[in-house]
Amino acid sequence: MDKRIENFAKLAVEFGVNVQKDEDVLISTPVENPELARLIAEESYKKEARKVAIDWKDDRITRLNYEYQAGETLNEVPDWQVEKSRYQIAEKKSNRISIVSEDPDLLKGLDQVKIAESIKARSEKTKEFVKYTMNDIVSWLVISVPNKKWAKKVFPDLGEEEAYNKLWEVILDVSRVSESWEETKANWQNHIDTLDEKASFLNSHQFDKVHYKSSNGTDLEVGLPKNHIWMSAGSSNAKGDRFIPNMPTEEVFTSPQYDDVNGKLVASKPLVYNGVVIDDFYFIFENGKVVDFDALVGKETLAKMLESDDGSKNLGEIALVPYDSPISNSNILFYNTLFDENASCHFALGKAYPTTIKDGASVEDDKVREELGINDSLIHEDFMVGTSDLEIIGYKGDEEFKIFENGNWAF
Ligand code: ZN
Ligand code: ZN
Image (cartoon, rainbow, N blue to C red; front, side, top):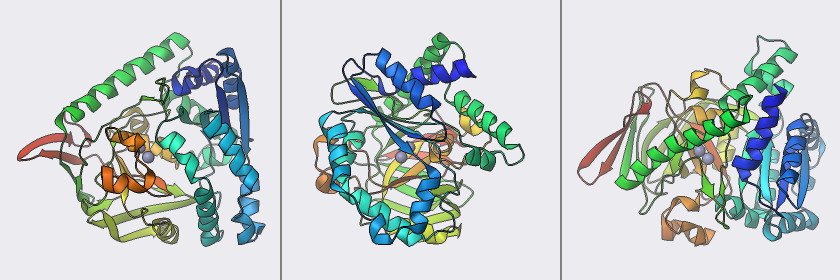
């Protein structure tokens, strides 16, 4: 597996953020599994990066902080932290690599209100830096490495060590990483081409509206804004360099019209939010907003998420993923959005990507609703809705077009 992990690091640097000479790289990584970050740092320097900086994350310390610190201490965002982001992100325009590796039950049993408030306080203080990734000003990438608790949650029947190795293997499989670098590159080139084809077909049709129907109860109409762009694996940063923000990625996505979503939307997989599992849930939308919802598991956490701010009850992303994707066919429930969202059609509540509207990236956050018809919020949370019988019809005036049939692309 070592050779594959090396290729994964190379993939992250060359195809992921696509590091250029003299650029800075900012990696956030779990302390529990630092190897990939170290390999990425080395590959970045080989690509003549100017400087690689690391933000270490420790799940156990995070849990202890939430457990023992007073709410007001948790809500503190020292100026030096804001200045650090200003230097690394706004000034140095660092390539940002987030290596995510979460224990899905990390914050289970803790005070959800305290957690939600401190996350909100931090998001508000650092809001100005969100646009650097959301608007693709800098190259950014989310990838993942296993940890033992997460691996045990995904493979409860295996021993700890075995589960951990199995999760590594699966992550490399679904990220299309092989032992040969040439093959890994070719895998990604082919994959990008396939996704681009679907996106350009949808872009040429410019549907006004799409209608979702599934036997689980989903019956939802979603308006699409004028000049929307369906995006796929690849993006370009402000300098014009290509990058791939998610690995794995199987989705073709755009933004819904923020105030034109009506009907019922039933989730098809659990969602892990703030270290808590939310499961068996649905939303009822009217004129774009969630007006009713329920969840059999984690309802309190879901309610808190919906109350985050004015935009957290509206949709900010609509993404198409075939039911027969490699991740979906693995039949593994990852309890991790990066993987589960790429195994299933999904939506996100909260902020939309302004890059999904023609010339959208130049519009200020507080004007995106009015000028582009897309949503703004402090949150952006994907949740999964794909099923084996999902049907999606696109409408353009009187014209109807089948986009998805039996959970898969219909064209
Ligand atoms: Zn997505
Ligand atoms: Zn998303």
